Amino acid sequence: MTWSWRVERAYWAGEWPLLWRRGWWLLPFLLILTFFSAAPFVGHVINWTVVAAVAIIVLRRIRAARHFDSLLQRRWQEQTARWIVGSWPSLAVQLGLEVRDYSGRKIVTGAGNPSWDGSTCFLQVSMPPGLAREDLVAAAARIAQAFNAVRVTVEGEQISSLALRIEYVDALAQPFGFPLGGTWDGASVLMGISDGGAEWRLPLGPHTLVAGSSGSGKASLVWGLLLGLVQPIHSGLIEVWGIDRKGGMELAMGRDLLTRFASDAAHSVALLEDAVDQMQDRARKLAGITRQHTPTVDSPTVIVLIDELAALTAYETDREMLRRANAAIATLASQGRAVGFIVFACLQDPRKETLPARGLFTQTVGLRLRDRTETAMVLGDGAVAAGALCHEISASTPGVAYVLAENGTPPQRVRAAYAADEQIRDAALTYFAPNPRPVVLPVVEDESKPRRTRATRRTKTTEPQEES
Ligand SMILES: Nc1ncnc2c1ncn2[C@@H]1O[C@H](COP(=O)(O)OP(=O)(O)OP(=O)(O)O)[C@@H](O)[C@H]1O
Image 1: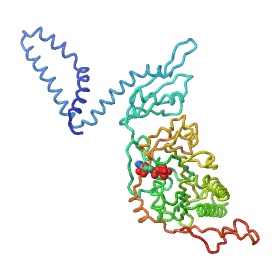
Image 2: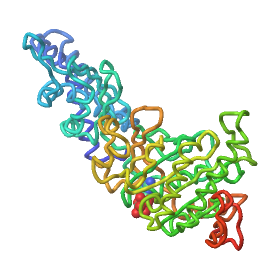
Image 3: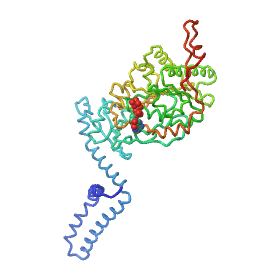
């Protein structure tokens, strides 16, 4: 930290009360000595005491200069903790975090000693019987305002072990990127950082639904997934089949990372139905051998990546196409996981009408959404009650989201890394998919000929129309 008067003032503002607490007894001591100043040596004792006190003050200031940052932070933590603990009882009463016992006596929610992790304070709270975790969650925003914090969340599930997490600095406020080609652990993808500043890894396996309003950062989730998987994509252990119903605009930049690609409705549905066929084919082959597919180059994990899912499942004007898309997505999402077919889909409008198979997506990422109702549609009422407030995410922090894992753990607040265009182009150039294949449209059925089954229609192709 560079020196400034502001820093100096902050130092002395913390130093004087500390010196006073430790050295107040010196004043009466010196005062008493002055009564005996006529006695031999007493004058010397007074002088040397004053000199020693000044020397201590100066030496402490010199020593503090070596670790000014941590010293000032520690002082700030101590002052803030005292303030939090001191103002908690009246705040708890004002927020109604109290109950009355049978004799009419008030029992107020108590607070323990705060502990710190950087600029985040953890305050243990003990709630009296009759109050619930939800009461604390409901009061979190007002507690944050009362304590001048950027956010307050409730940690812990059991009423007996709840703590308030009071954040004074938002670890997710600043955008960041990741270097390309990080290590792939075979089970999850490094997507960004979580609230506490730790890595956020998205498990690969559950079908994932990403929902967010326009401009909320869905693209950073799409590219986070692709860039996090560049190694297995390039080695052929993972294939990504991309559908971009925004006319191919989004995925075009990293197209070479995709094994298959479709942008119009007909090719998108053909790609989905092909995925269903291959999934069922693989399921037949694995039946009786294993219950969980292990990816190999000959039998890779297939990720069906869909940007703007609603264009396929709701906005498509061809009703037959709509029906086929919904059927294929529901089949993939209900049967694909064990045989290595995973759906990762993004959409803006999370209503049930836009995605009938919403319940089959077991891992959900809620970016900024329009209102509480939308948040509840994406993450569920329980997650909203637990503090996942997608509708309160600021428009100035695209990529910030709440993730609901399939194992039922409380929603996690995260921010996705930002992938620059240059990085996406580099990735596509260096880590291209080794075995790209076009999407071939099934031949249009001639009504004059006898009808064939759907399976035959898909496999028999004459003069195929490709989208490669
Ligand atoms: N993780 C991120 N960190 C920082 N900035 C981001 C992040 N993600 C997106 N942005 C910024 O926000 C803008 C909008 O993001 P993005 O295009 O991903 O939104 P979107 O949800 O895909 O919107 P739409 O649905 O309208 O395409 C981007 O231009 C980018 O500058």
